[in-house]
Every structure is written in structure tokens, then in C-alpha cells.
Image (cartoon, rainbow, N blue to C red; front, side, top):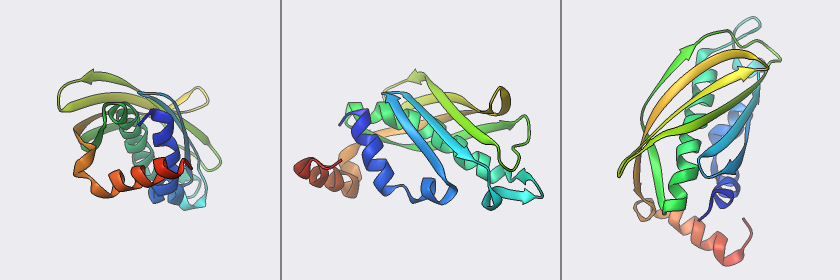
Length: 154
């Protein structure tokens, strides 16, 4: 599977992204860009986003960056841990952009670091560690990929 196949499949299956109104593109293996516009469902107080919405976006920014690499190795990944620093509030109407880079690739772990911005304003920085495992261990994903490749509709 290549990184673009992942993008198509993830769009079909990730309810979490859709629930929070996140969008992303896979630029290449290990390089993705997320966007999210802060609206009323993200607010914790008048005009200010809840930190959980930003953390959810950061987990996806870091994790899908790792996953876009992992699938090129016929692997999947899961979050082991991630850390976030909130640097500025995200406000109602802000259009957030997030991206990450891969800092380390080992036999079983991938470490990524990234940021979320609104224009030039830095909203948050994060770092995550992700466990790599064979794609076959997640049978439904493997089955979805087989069906999608057979029909070439992804």
C-alpha cells in the first residue's frame, strides 16, 4: 500500500476526523497536513477551543504522519504516548493547520514531532511515539484493503 491509498481508505473509515471536522492530505510517506476550523462544537468557553479538540487534532497529525510511513512498510501503528504543549488559545473561527515530521524510525517504534498553527501563530507543539506492527494483525484493515484493491475504488 502506498501513502495515497492510505489517504483514501482513512477518509472512508475515520469517524473521529469527520466528527471533529478535520481534513488532511498525504503529501508523501511521512508527510501529511491537517486542517480544522474551530467552530461551536470545539468550544469550552465563549470563543475559545477546548484543549481536547486540539489534542485530538495533534494525535492525528502525529499519528497519521507515522502511519503514512508505516503502510509503505506493510505495517500499521498505534499510539504509545504523545505529549502536547498548548502555547496559544485557538479561537472561534480560527483555521488551524498541523503538520509533523518523523524524527526516529526503529524496528518497532516511530517518533514524530509536530505543530498546530493558525497562520503564523503557534497554537501547540507535540511529540508522539507509535508502535509498528504487521498489517495482518488488524484483520479488518487488511480485509478492507483487499476489497478496495480488488475493486480499485480507493
